[in-house]
Image 1: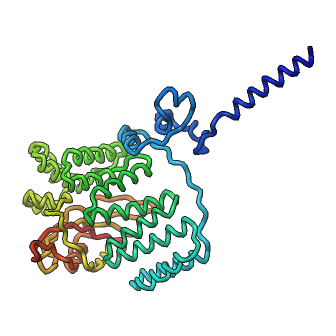
Image 2: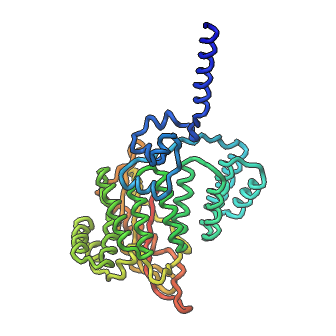
Image 3: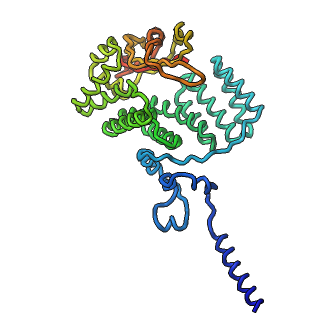
Length: 395
């Protein structure tokens, strides 16, 4: 009897062990991490069908599902990426190249980077090389070549989340400038998902692209979403957001709502600036909201760095100024108007945006933009006056 019992015991143990080995491991290697996350977030990574839940097989959600989860207020799960450091000799060459680029010796800098590309590089190293090439091409005004370089950087492989975000931000700006609007939206969606939660600035950037695509209602929804996020985080509503909202509402012929936004703007703008803003024609408002007639824009050729105000230096301040201005048929800048600005006091590695004196950089920005030169818009083979928006930064 004892031998029979032993045989039965061994038989049942074998069945239990076989059953355990048949269970599929978590392909993301993060079972314990998932257990710590809220159930609402876990649902993003698991199949919703009862059968899939029973089998415990995670599935990758689509971009649409992830974005829908973000707009429902769910926080997405972002798993850490452990990546090796760059080798010292590669770092040295990257540093040398950056020095050449900062000195406007672009050809020298790119030559160093191209030599690096001929070596066997890690994913991170290859990303950094292509990213620097993208920067150099951009500073040379070679926007299409810059786009290709940043795309190559992202194709290098899995890099750190911050590196990927940096590349996507650069691509978004370039796609938007080059009129590749659908690509710009796709990049913003990727940034939102990488971020793991809604971001007011990114959501508003998406609204600007949608405005360009004349998707007025969707643009308005994103503007209102950016306001909702800012309110939730107790952040101030930016004046430029309201200017864009006014432009969208006028396109949709929502006159009463547009009038309410204009009333809000009056409370936020200095009186002299608002008077100039209030006299802008509807078409000029559309320009300010990011829309250009015939999708043609004046292209910046050269910018003169602004003179840093002495008061800002003494108070350890940085900031930026957004300007609307006319570009003449000869590429000269005329009639710049301040439409938004921010002065920031640096304190203990933290930034606090101060309302007063919020116009400390205005005059320096105006003087700098007046010295800038643009390639004018061409219509029918002739250069014509047009309007443009530029942000002058003080850092």
